[in-house]
Image (cartoon, rainbow, N blue to C red; front, side):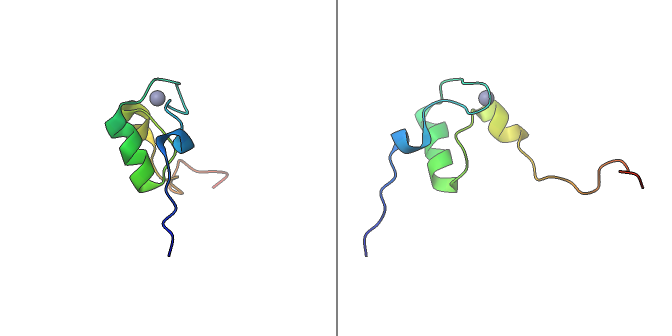
Amino acid sequence: MDLEERTIEDVGERCEVCGAKLTSAELQAALESGEPALCSIHADEVVPIADDEAGFGG
Ligand SMILES: [Zn+2]
């Protein structure tokens, strides 16, 4: 079985939100989690969409 080797270039080396250059640790985290490349700031801000937001026509 071949392991698909993903390179850092595959993810991109900049935050997809602000374009900040990522550290190798941040890149590695993105690679391992399969999440988009985000800087530590934006990676921390990304949260699941809450369906509990203040009433939508409710
Ligand atoms: Zn960012």
